[in-house]
Length: 319
Image (cartoon, rainbow, N blue to C red; front, side, top):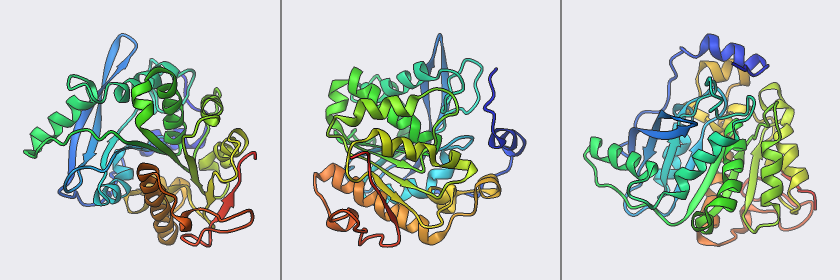
């Protein structure tokens, strides 16, 4: 078995049993499971669904980071559900003997290909994604919502690399789903120590019209000193690719859902930064789905800041 060579791995193994103090379950929160192929086997992973009131505006795939679970993105998921989105937040392995992991410990591309298939078959009532939502809704005794046509992928940390890779795989293998994918948001993206998944995926997506924006923290061990953000800025030839939060911690995306493990190793979320992150992520998602451009969420020109987040540092792409 290959083990990621970082302090986070060792500490995660030692502290993973620490109980997290996530947000209180909202009425829209449906715990469930998702089946994902792993070579000849099938992984049965826990997955949380968050249902909005009324018809969903779109589907948001919200992916947690390395050595984390869907619990740590619960607060952010609830914010998106409150804004009208159906949210899918699966818990993906960070260690698995066959290499079916969130981050790349050798070659997880086949596993991420299978994750892409979840969305490629989202409209199939017999597909794994539909089956997961149906079972979760029935267990909770609530109506089963229809899958929206519009999708947005959002990933934190190693989850950001995963959603980027899956988005590119959707582009090449699932044209119908690709037509409904409206954007990708990367929350302090972390590049795996092994391989070039995020770089290859960003290069594949670069020439498309798909919006890809990042909200990054300052360089630190937990974000591999922003190598993921560097990949975004060097691989995307666009004038604006996101922002860096002032003094931001890697756990800002987790906010109130973070726990002892995250805060001990990666810093305590700053409430102002978590609010700024949530504001931008929701604002960008709304624009992606509606096809609009809300001025406050983007710089008006070179050197400008964002009026919705004036303290944030604007990040340019490769040009």
